[in-house]
Image (cartoon, rainbow, N blue to C red):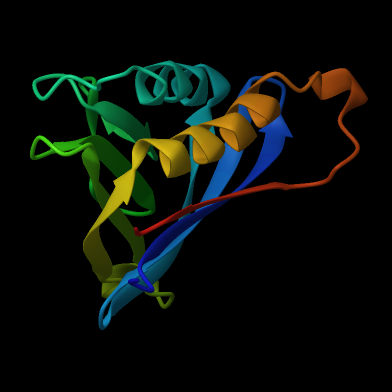
Length: 155
């Protein structure tokens, strides 16, 4: 059993917009970052994650942060999670890339990022998706300020 994981903490910034904080680790590599994401992106990720099997050529992808010309800008705070099949035995490869800037004067800020990869299974992905789905379906007007915590663990 590996100690690798991806943990998301989700809260609303305002209606239709979430703040997604990610912590991930695999072996000696670990990181933490947060970024904003449209709730619709989380809903699409849940739909993609619930497919069985997830197609090799169309993995489940969640991106958060700033976008330039429709592409995720990998500057400032960002996260990208890709979940797709690995092999023919039902394994899923999780690739989580997160990044942020080191605080300091604007002219001295530097970016840092980490990418971790680990294997999981469809059952774990389904549990992860259920928490994300519960967040996405929460009525913002009735939201009580609590965060939703979803963890995807290695097999």
